[in-house]
Length: 294
Ligand SMILES: NC(=O)c1ccc[n+]([C@@H]2O[C@H](COP(=O)([O-])OP(=O)(O)OC[C@H]3O[C@@H](n4cnc5c(N)ncnc54)[C@H](OP(=O)(O)O)[C@@H]3O)[C@@H](O)[C@H]2O)c1
Image (cartoon, rainbow, N blue to C red):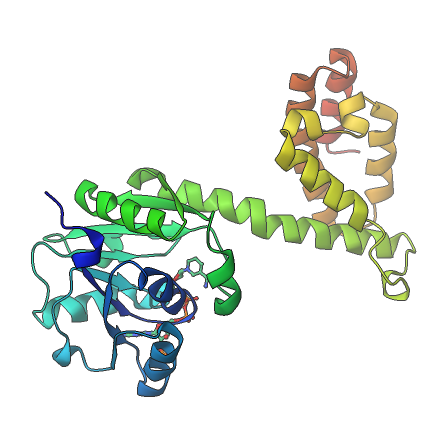
């Protein structure tokens, strides 16, 4: 029979943006033990923010805890985890987890303990905002079943929406989040460069002229699905427009053409499912997008 959360203690190694935000949220539901940072000053600042626990920088002074959150930067997780194990405070009933999006629980290197990774799909850039906005955040949970059960319960308590991701798919999952969020920014930045090359002086305008269209598109996609949200020349099967685009891209940076063609191919697949364009026109567009001399 697992202990109720309120009987458990959680200690955090690396209470930076994510660590201190989660600890503050967790503090409503369990006891916060020790807050371990590299520097005493930052440990004290984290403690002020969390409003519970004790600050620590020396692993030799660690006290037992039921749950250990290792929230150092990704490239310090293995080192912090090894230091935790080496100081001898871990018990075989403890749960240890990190919150990296790209690493699995194996990165902790703690084969003898119950370990997991929980990746909240949230930006903790501003911890005060995150306290107010965390509820509703989807959290990808991966690792040993016992650890996952404990952490799914804990994250659900603070308003998270835990879902399981298999260990062998963690990198693919993370690539999906990077492609959807980070690359969306890159795509919009490329679009701005193309507008500038087309003589649209964005700096002279008080607002990006694409802004309403970008917001409508994202809203449509999120409130319906890709098939319903897709519009434009490929969805209509307008091959002459695609041909004109490819001609206009000649002499422009190679990257613009490469991205246009790759995203065009992805759009072709959606258009075929959507069924608005006739198959012949989509075949012509496919030839245009995938031939070298366009
Ligand atoms: N930030 C986000 O939006 C976000 C989102 C999802 C997941 N994550 C994940 O959350 C984790 C933490 O990211 P973050 O952005 O919160 O990092 P961060 O703000 O840079 O904070 C890292 C903290 O780790 C401490 N630290 C570094 N090495 C340490 C060590 N060996 N022992 C003890 N403490 C150590 C630092 O202490 P000092 O201040 O004393 O140097 C700092 O307080 C990462 O795994 C990241 O991938 C972050």
